[in-house]
Amino acid sequence: MIDQKKSKGFMRAFKEHSVVRAFGSVLGKVSGGMMILLVFVAIFAPWIAPFDYAAQNLMNANLAPSWPHLLGTDEFGRDVLSRLIYGARTSLSVSAAAIFISISAGMTLGAAAGYFGGAFERVVMTVVDLTWSFPDILIALIFVAIIGPGLTSTMFAIAIAYLAQFTRLTRAQIVRLKSETFIEATINLGAKPSHILLRHLLPNALAPVIVVGMLAIGDGIVLEATLGFFGLGAQPPTPSWGAMMSSGTAQLFLAPWVIIFPGVIIALTVISVNLFGDELIRSLDIRERMREN
Image 1: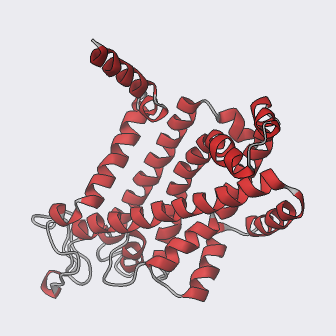
Image 2: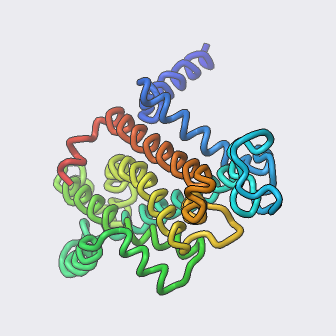
Image 3: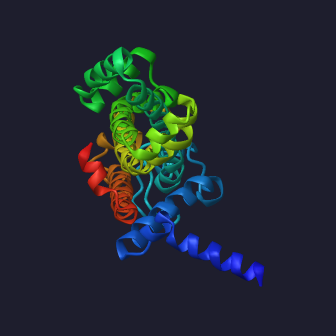
């Protein structure tokens, strides 16, 4: 009987979880399903892709979509579908890792600035506001131009481009939460700043940051594709959606499928991430808190 009660309690908590509630609407199911499918394809790319993404066959260059090349081939005779599948691994992993780094660093800086205030807050927020005044793509391009092209530099370039966003949001949440009664009571009881930040402030500030991070992944995918389009992202023969579009520009009228299919995949991915992010905002009921920041 106890096990049944625990099981029912677990199922109730699972159904009430914000991420699960985000799947409640039709848009949530479709966008969430698309995201799950993309992650599945990226993880199991070696078993799903029909061909080696780097295998060249100049005899089959620029073949139109047909059997066995369902999405055609590029100028080197490489299978477009296989490169799209492996490109999902590159684009999604780089974007997700970059946003995770940006969230971690941004929450650390924003929490420290919001809690301690003073000269430290002014210095941090001045630097953050300076980076905030530049477009994300410009910051990323400058960073990659200094460090050099490649997946690692692309990842850190995206992380730096969105650092200001998460720092500002976290600081605003911490400043708001500091005036709450339970925080003042914790301070009066003599709790250490590290305890207050880690146990009380950051957990309560996490929800809006996670939602903004979810939406930023879509922007990160576009930014990664942009850097790849300029040849600053993944280097050949590693496939990425942006690099595929870049190589397809020279074949636009001869083999338009080389540029069309990566563009469609990027658009569907970003739309799915943004739609699911909107559903997550509704399920968390934090839209008002996000507007304040």
